[in-house]
Length: 186
Image 1 (tube, rainbow, N blue to C red):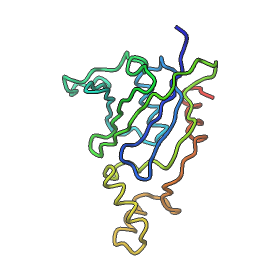
Image 2: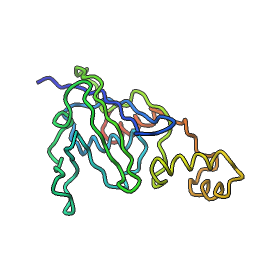
Image 3: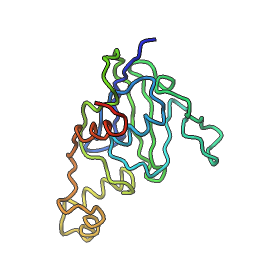
């Protein structure tokens, strides 16, 4: 079988403004590496548990406390998880904040000899870790709009960014630079 490249769109479910990434990954990439690709592309820090869902089937790294109905994905590739154009699945990160990512296999491309993964597009900044999921993120954005809000100083100090949180910021070149370091991608 010829090597295939999957074009996958990742959208943070219920995000407003919409937070999304488009990535290219080899279909034979291990799910553990795909997890890391999503972390890098979205801007997460990989400090929480995660799982993939396809229909009612759940997949995660082996853990002694893992539910019996979760399948260990140690030997799985992305092609084992999804393999048809238009196919949809989910990636859940941080079971406290419960960040749900909608995954869509948009296109199956022929291998062009380049090294993957690669981010080809994206929109908007990833929410900060531990901000309370979508409701907490939306609340944080409202607070940041009002410098007179009683929680404004606490939030800006917690964010640790003197220039403020830029909702629209996304730089695919930064993502691809990390991919180059981590995977040798170009």
